[in-house]
Length: 72
Ligand code: SF4
Image (cartoon, rainbow, N blue to C red):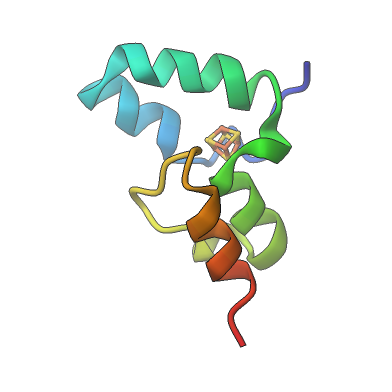
């Protein structure tokens, strides 16, 4: 278990708490407090900075994260 280093500024927990609270809680437990390195948002933020993370990107969008971090 580890606390994500982007948690204080990441928009995902706040956004999902408003539109899908159950899913948001599950994501926070699984990713933000569990395995942040498996989160798509974390992958992009760690590789390219938080400003490069798409606003509505979900933690599960790892294929998209790969594309964003491997663009030529
Ligand atoms: S959604 Fe991902 S990047 Fe954002 S706080 Fe949770 S683990 Fe970190």
